Length: 571
Image 1: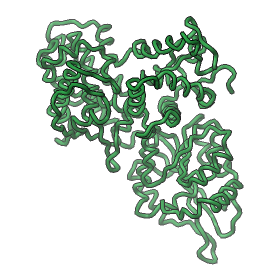
Image 2: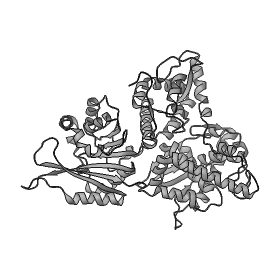
Image 3: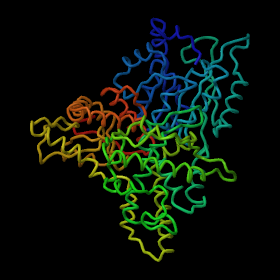
Image 4: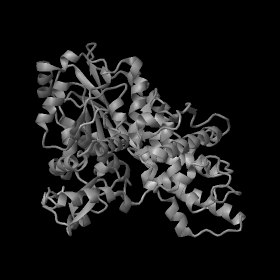
């Protein structure tokens, strides 16, 4: 944005905060709020004094407030500290930090912001706004008009027409236009407020997914495996994606290959057919001599943050290399847009190093195999709707395996198939946390993160802070000790903003004592968090990790409308 920063920093910024607070947000936002569903997720861009964000929070909406001025952010935090608002520094046209959060919003508010966006940046800005908006979501833009003649301030129809045209190109349309006097009573100023709505599935990503899942010709299960491997990356490793330009993201090819191995390992152990002629490992191009070693692994061992040495490191490396080669030459090459031969997921494989003696599964290592480009609208659809997309992938993959088996005169046990298709088992993911908690129990240093109550060996559970039912994440940062009775009440509910705030010091203390005790565990803890929490910066501290978890909580709440929970005694 091209605003004069001197007007919004220091004493000038403080004066603007005091001025902005005089307006009534209920009147200013009625055009939007009368159409908002309860507990919507709202992005306030250029949030200024926090006036509008705070009022939306009092109406039980989840609010992320973006403000580039450090002075105004600081003043707003002090003025509205009692409200559950997540603040961050970001600005148009890039909106880069907001895009990395993985949150999709029911509404975006631009109050007195558009005039600060340079004309050459407006199309990109609106495209960025649409990219973080849910299908059917709302955008409220207020346009300022100052008197240029004796007739007084008049709406700039060319600017309004420009916004309408750009919006239509992005699948959004104008649903309401209102003219208003200045809320601060300043003479010679009027406002036009435009309310836009994004059409459902405006990006075309979901029809493209349906095409690949249901209609695209398949001689093996490889295309479904590739799409599911990408979906798992979008759901559980958003932090490894890097945006390149405005229309695509790039992910390490090794990450997709790692997910590929995790998906196929239990299927091959069960000898489930992956092509009409395949049974077991026969005919699978990525299954070579080192696969025998890989079969020693539990599926949950193939994860980000894992460390391998000796023959296990060599086997994992070779299997990743073979999987990457198969992905590049087969499904990524043949998965094309309807009606042409352009690959949906263009992929470049790098020449891999010789078999190493020691490896850590981190970003740098996974990137050494190559990179995959994913259209931004497809990536965002997988981020937002993986809980809908993945069941469709599993159902189609299962149907195809049944078909292959019948052609081989075999009958598959549905229970075995369902077990093999499962990505993770929660009881396995909590084992390391449970063992750590038992160690702390010996010194009577284990407390419920939600209540502060001291725990005993027969009272504690390991709770998934962000519940497994809505997001199957077994990362160390997501596993926390809780009193069994409290955990039973929380179950599949998201902790509320108040619950997170009340438990923050205890959560930070658990993370410190449980996962910072040695270099290997600390590295696993950080690498897992950096991969799965898109709001987390590369330089990670315990404190900014907690904030990244809060942003992830908002994203899950927004995408899945998960029920919230506050512990006993909370408000």
